[in-house]
Amino acid sequence: MENIRSHEVLPVNRRAKDTFFKTVYATEERQRALASFLLGVDGEKITIANVRPVLFGNKENDLAFECDDVFYLMTENQASVSPNVPYRLLEYITAGLRSTVDSERLLYGGGRVYFPVPKLYMLQTGLEITKEKLPKQVQYDIRLSDSYRLISQKYGKMAAMPDLDVVVHVYDFRMTLDETVKYIEQNIMPDRFMAYDNDLRNYAFTANGITYIQRAVKDDKHKKYIVPINVSTVTEYLSLLIERNIFVDLLTDKEVCDMTMAQFSRDDMLIYQGREEGREEGRAEGKAEGKAEAIIDLLSDIGELPDSLENLIMKQTDAQTLQKWLKTAARADSIKEFEKSIGLISLER
Image: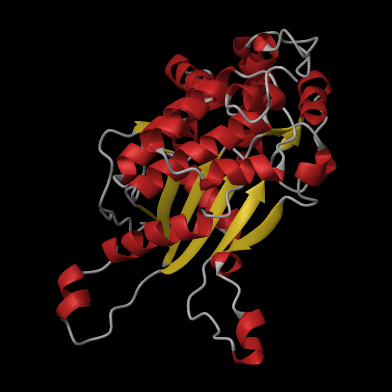
């Protein structure tokens, strides 16, 4: 009989809401299959110890569990890839590892305390207008050391080497608008997805398809999002996924379907996250970063974001200004309209 252990990870946001991502991996069977895929081991030989989520904001869109002395932490992201994810997961995994041992022995004992092996992952979904923003392959790594300040120019070979690094293994299932329509209408997936016949890929098809259809229904002006010929509502798309044998056990549950449709209402979700994440962080820096990233995500959906504009947004620290820009970005139909609304471009031009 399997030895199932439970661990409590603190702090936890007790008001957090479950998401479809957490629902997908709520069962030990799917957790075991995920661990088997990530490390290439026999899933039948894996034992599961569920771990409470760590340091989350307003939604539990991260997954944490322990399998045979390996501590898995996977975050799910529906926006552009954030270079700050390695640091965020460093905070998460530190609290997570501490939860697996005796805290008093760790802090005050003289003997060595042994931890499970940490493995950090990010599942990336989302839609891009052009292929240029997509990676050439699904799996790649991002590192905390990529964000360290450059000191080699000043010190040359004498520059100090960092003593700390964090590696996050990314599975990037973003799709272009054309790829999404092709999948919905013809059940044809991008070639780079072919090697990933698992729940991660199915989750991406669910998230990307729902997001696309919701935007297509709203896109009356620019017609970048064309309503697919075979489905015109999210409900119809969920039925299509069931026909394709994707998450049949979940998508036949009305409560799960309602939660899923609400989660992937992209604009509302980003506005909510931008407003609430910083508040949960409890410090001005976290609030500004959360709102700035939400603004950039919204603008990226309606056009190519100039580097100068992105830098301006990320450098803005005034909470009221960011809140105003966030609402403006949610209403704007183009980058130029946003720039005009915040005064970067003269309305008379």
